[in-house]
Length: 157
Image 1: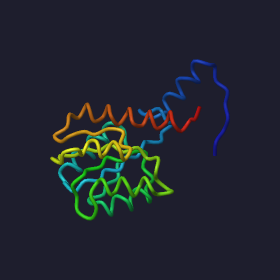
Image 2: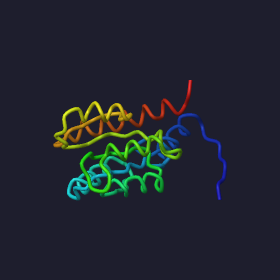
Image 3: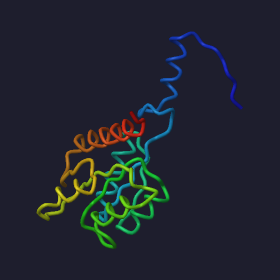
Image 4: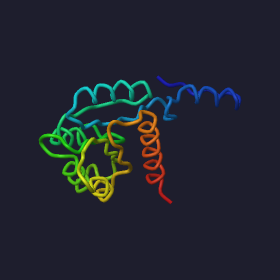
């Protein structure tokens, strides 16, 4: 049961800020889908992102990634390129064509040695392309910026 109460201005602001999570969204954690076949990397990313205040869901190949994107409706996807059952490019392409998930921001996080892979990722709409091994602070900054950009575009002109 909710009960409405009136509070003086400053006190009201403090309570609202207290109710907001670290991400400023009234307790709703942003959900990030990690799609990578390297389980150690997924585990390390999960721990780091949980500590940063994000909810994490995982997939270990391209097919699982597409399924989880539709099922979990993440706010952002971290996507590797070289994986079984659909590489990162095919996953991004399928999500881009999907009626359900075309606007989910994608960050490619990859150790792929392919030439032109960054150009290809950006052409598919990636917000950022980060090479492994990655700088954890750079990754967290890219995630924040991609989520902010997504928030800006969803609010409209």
